[in-house]
Amino acid sequence: MSKDGKTGFNKILSMFMDYFGMGRTASIVAMIVVSCVMIFACFWFFHSAPPKTMTITSGEKGSAYYSVAEKYAKILARDGVKLVILPSAGSVENLQRLTDRSFKVDIGFVQAGLAKGQNVENLVSLGSVSYQPLLIFHRLGKPVEILSQLAGRRMAVGREGSGTRKLAMALLAVNGIEPGGDATFSGAEGEEAAAALLAGKVDAIFLMADSASSQTMRALLRTPGIGLVNFAQADAYVRRIGYLNKLTMPKGAMDFGKNIPPRNITLVCPTVELIAHLCDAPGCALSGRWRTDALTPGIGILIRSLWYAAERQPTKKRSKAYV
Image 1 (cartoon, rainbow, N blue to C red):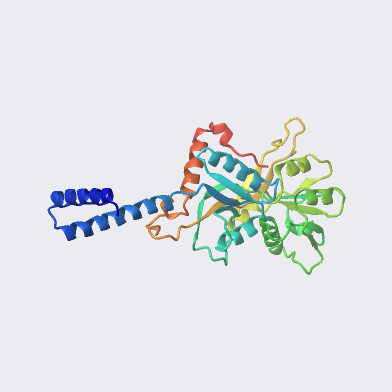
Image 2: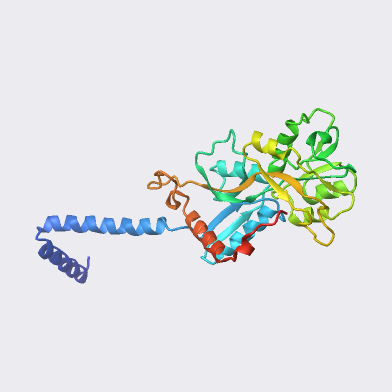
């Protein structure tokens, strides 16, 4: 150590000894302890700071899930946080990614009702994003109000990994329509499914926001010869399947002038949940209700940013369309 360094150290040591009234050895030990605490505090401050990048697992490009994720990215960018959007097959694949800790993803959209049988103890819902109506379009030439009317038909129910397929197969199963019977099932979804319906390759298609765009669904509603299933048994579905809700698409909601739809349409739908990881770092243990400091670093910024953005929107802009 140089002479100047020794002089500086001796001055600090003398000040320490005079101020606290300790001996030389005790003062040196105290200085070392204080230095270690300060170094640890600096390390902890920078280590625990929220990351500048987050990853969300969304849905197919062009789907409502992906569009909402893009809006979140714009909101988070205001706070200097980059949101990386990963496309997916839909809710089922999103849940698989979130439960697999080796997959680097922070948040994702998951359809309610899919977590049964899954290990979700390290996941938490940040809240319901929206209702997600199931729209079943058909070309049977007559009104369809009971799903058993689709028995023996050709149906596009979405590909594996989508919440659409999961819900479609569950609803068909309680109506006695399952693989191995007279009905045939296709994995087509979104625009592909709509094209197959219009071409007469399938008799009915199941569409939801995790794998289809609102533009595709709106176009089908306006297409002559294409009908929309009206769930006459919606109350029974809601009572029997706890994660479902009942919604009504009012007469003329899509087009007042052309009166589309021509009558009130009853739909069933789960909610879409925004799911995040709980923080497993020391000091993040839950105490009673979950808190933002019990979440993976960065999620707190997301919650505050989205809440602030929602509060700045006029009430009429916060209302959601059915499709």
